[in-house]
Length: 173
Image 1 (cartoon, rainbow, N blue to C red):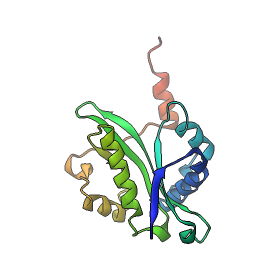
Image 2 (cartoon, rainbow, N blue to C red):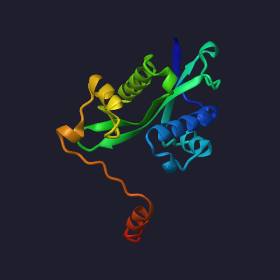
Image 3 (cartoon, rainbow, N blue to C red):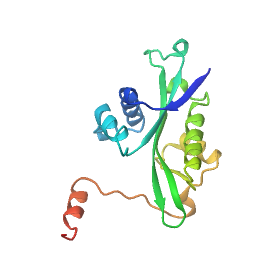
Image 4 (cartoon, one colour):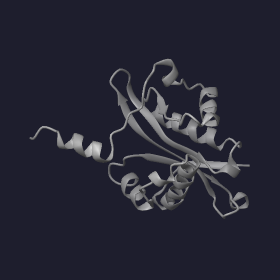
């Protein structure tokens, strides 16, 4: 089956939003999705976008049972390592279940790596849930290093009240 990887357009945001929810259901975290296609449009297709996104598209003859031709996506953004320089962080990589095992996920991830290299990024980083061994094995097979095992890094997050409290403690100007 042939597929095309292309930069997402603003009009793809409803499809991307649909797949974000499908990914969240797969990860058993659908209650944590708080954005819709409107926030994706606002945050990704503005003067200073917060992220970039690629989509995988199949021809009409290979559309899904539900009629979709956009069957996968990857959403990524740039970070900076004070030790190494520019990096790209792949927030999501998702392919609809009926299209897995056909090279689409590999194509999306490789395209992110290519885009990152073109922007002088020295690494591609991502996070994987500990129970998602299929994805973890896929990434490791492709050459990723598990930093939890090799360097002992913990991934931390401030959100909600903790973020509000931390922000309120900022020195006044």
